[in-house]
Length: 379
Image 1: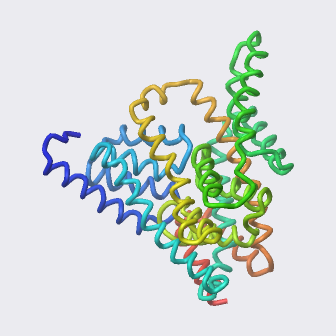
Image 2 (image 1 turned 30 degrees about the vertical axis):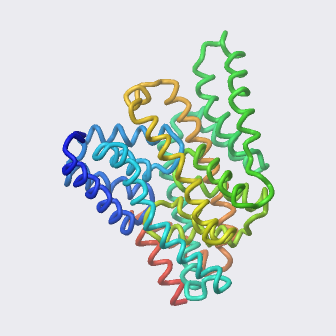
Image 3 (image 1 turned 90 degrees about the vertical axis):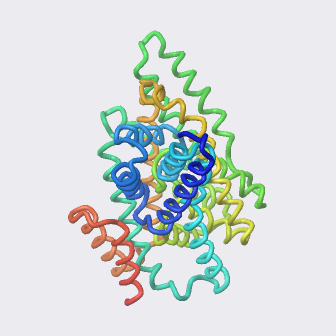
């Protein structure tokens, strides 16, 4: 980007702000849908980047923690308007969803729930179970490339059910393919590397006592280590906030996930809802900043290294293992959410119908979620 012309720079920055605000208000359907919309907007229509450059950016977001579609927005803003564009693009993409979720969280707390949306949420929750199951199936076909990765996923899922720390699971899952690729004589050293990398993460649990600082640290940790889609986020939230620290109930987490689904923009803004429920408006801001801040840092640091990251064999093997472990966590959280959402024949039938529409007829998940909400309201 040529920033020597101040007028041109301001024009580009304004363009970045407006286009990502629009996307933030209209981008339904989750990370995959967001990336597809960005490809249409910035490769085909506006020609900010070439198709091969866009694919490089997509690959780079897979190799760093955080929300993939938000990181794509940050990358594209940086390509268009430099460091200022990096900040503006990310903030503009996040802000609409944060505001919408914040309003719903206010109503949720003000009325002891969402009385005007009770029926909608009753219909949306079973659909969410189907949406996550679809993502589990689609990602699984890509992530499970061989028997080793299948074994990693099965083992991680079993250990997750037993309550083993998710960060430890992902660290070990990532290192297993790396160690397995080493010559036999280096196996002992590789096993030591697994333990050396995993043990520090095992002590990174969120503080047990609630406070705004503890809330910020928890979501900062999640944003700093979470690989995979936004759906993997729910596994972390369930294990720590529901089972570990008991800050939320199963029902509150399910409501937070549902609100994140029925609003446009990043799924990670479920953190805004949770922050509001736990700490009011200040909690909403703290949680949102905490979970998204690492994405800005990682993109700023990794952008210049994209060619090297893309070509790294070790990084690819580590990511393969992390993806298998993330998939296992997604399966575990699907089970827990299913227990909370599928409470009678109506909700079970709605989940099955949603699954058929998603897997058999390839209906956009955003429309399925909207349809579930309408049916829930009518019923």
